[in-house]
Length: 218
Image (cartoon, rainbow, N blue to C red; front, side):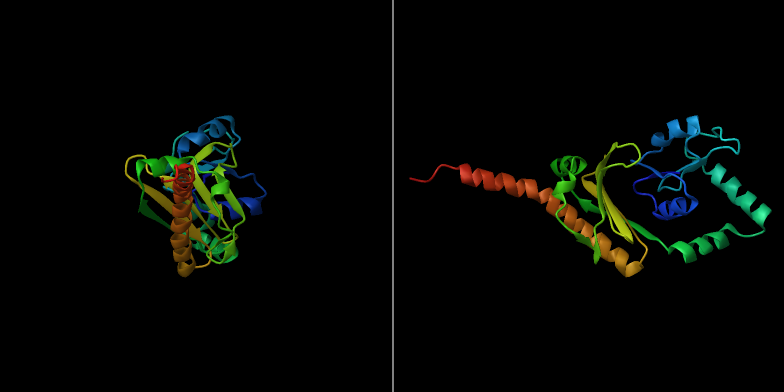
């Protein structure tokens, strides 16, 4: 099962129940092409609702995200099962929890965007996020070890990912919670503080170094 680092963790939970391998990659549908072509991926989906599936015989249907394929699948589910796909999703929510997702933006200079894109795990100093212990900090995607161009911080019931915009002087924070709207708002607020602190650290270190190396006044 293929997903990007900013797609819902509902995919993770369903994949684990099915006993399938999760293939988590950076943002961009291009990362699924090879797996769809060789049959190692049966599904590839990203946060913008783009998805593709393999054919029933395992061969490739399409190597790009497609709205028609999920629509056809929904129609087939309705016809074969006699149920609205929304009902099936509500059953998944009862079993795995209900995810709430949001995305916000924060200002960033060109220099800060470069810092964020090359951030290391060690630069994230926080140990908790929205009242939960941080379990994982990612700067490379687990599926193919490619840089994600930012950072993803995960807890048991939530996560956030921060990535610089390629066209504007901002960075984007994606976040998801399985504990409700208040928890999601806390993740978003703390995420910005965590990222801002990580971006400010090199600047502060440079200032300290400059001060310590300055010649004493006569």
